[in-house]
Length: 403
Image (cartoon, rainbow, N blue to C red):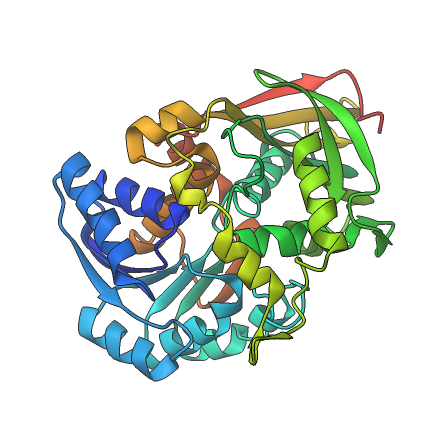
């Protein structure tokens, strides 16, 4: 059994901590820290009610490395689970190195002052972690995370090589709000408004944000319009599967979301450039995030399902020629809320964070250095998805995608 320190107190953290508490045989002591301690206390109270487990809580600024080091040394965890904001990744990794503890996150680093996320900053830490015998696992969420493992499972069990890969992320839920984001508003809007990029023939192809879309029939959700976007697992999947000719990421958005987002962009509210307001400097997007509904408050009203998965085409492992497989998970917002008090978008990220943590603290996944999910053995993770609320399904399609 292991002691863990979780950083961050949003919806993903709430799910992860609840699931850790449901697995007391793996996680003996759970500690939770965030800039706002009352949010940690609220999660701890829910965990106590639902699982009968005590969670210790702390107030911390994750960007203050000395304070983080002090907290880690006080708690003495075997793993720090970073569920804070992506631009806090590097300070938390620095603190883990100084305090001598393993690290896990769900999303790659993104600078505060630039809407550009890529792995180069975290990959640069590989030798530093390796030299002190520590492990850092990047992207143990759903996308990235489960989608990465889905791809590697297909390559291990179904396909000798992967020629094309399409990741399709559909949230078919309705939260009843005029405009709200499914996860942290600041990060969500930065992602969506960034130029789309996909991998094709050994290079990145860039297109304007939200300009390329296609209808797709999602099982148990229906037909939704999926938009081409950039997502960080494309970078790691292309690196660890160099034979891939084309890799793309698609996410669905409703007409109301697109309409509101377009207006907000047009009036400058999605900008990350500072502006002066009443003698103070503010970031418009951060102000917008402050007034939008918090994702962790949407669980009770959100109805419907998510459907996230990968479609891969390549040479069949059995030598029978080219084949296409679709592997996915369907998750109910209502079921997620009943179990953890959070909607399915938080659930589908928080559960994989718990699973990655469990595999690390138990030594099933191990190593020295910085690793992506694609580098880990997929089968143990896939087994735990089925056992802990995210069952997956795989089927052969008639042929490659037609879009």
